[in-house]
Image (cartoon, rainbow, N blue to C red):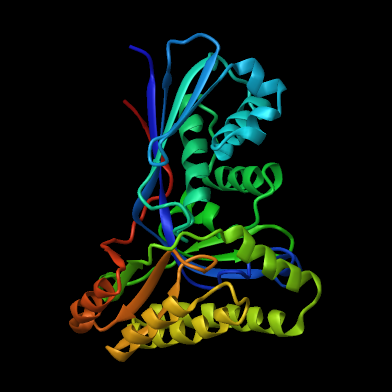
Length: 349
């Protein structure tokens, strides 16, 4: 029987500091992000296809399947340009180009993600991490978590030119509840938060994750912000400075087991986040949040760059059902999630 390797990497929700890890702000001022991985995952399966000189990429959630000869993938950039699965091809090519590889001429690489495209949970970066993790196991590359995250970042931002920050790759690779410090020098320090069990339980009980059904292009939102950063827009930079301060305050309140104040800080940070770009929120998102606050929510924010995807709410658990019912009436889909401790992992079938 041929070898079959499966991997998964967890998606994340970002509580504070999102956007401060994006260049050029990060390289000038440093970024700080508070986030946690959750029990939604991106998966990759690698197995031999039995078709000589054929590399197959299958994204089952997107219902897309593409086949290429190994020679075409390595020598013809048209494959990447025309593909609907650019992350798949770019990741495969990076592995081929940077590592000693054997027996890669007849592979089938299948992927799936628990969250919809454009969800704001870092699905693209998490998928990249999951693919690298699978190849790490399949080829015995011995990459550590830091190397996996950096490689995923390089593939997305450098090879594919996709706009975005760095938090998604590091949260997916390391997993858990983290405060991530993105140094001006380029170094990244991932600090696991030693939260009390009762804090995690209470925060989980207080959390609502609502999918708005709106898929958005995070790249366009981030691109609009980068242009403000490059032009030294003082108002924009001051808001990022304050968002970073709110991330620090949220971390302190969590460590003190103060979920109520944490929720209020989330609300204040979201108000600052909305000022970064007109594309971050919308009338429907504002209406969703306004109704949730009227029913007693402490705070909330859109997950990721904004514009749609998932909206996260922190509330008193006794009012959770009432808020959920209202969100369902507004055509939002509610996801039940738990905080996950593990980062990317792989196993042999």
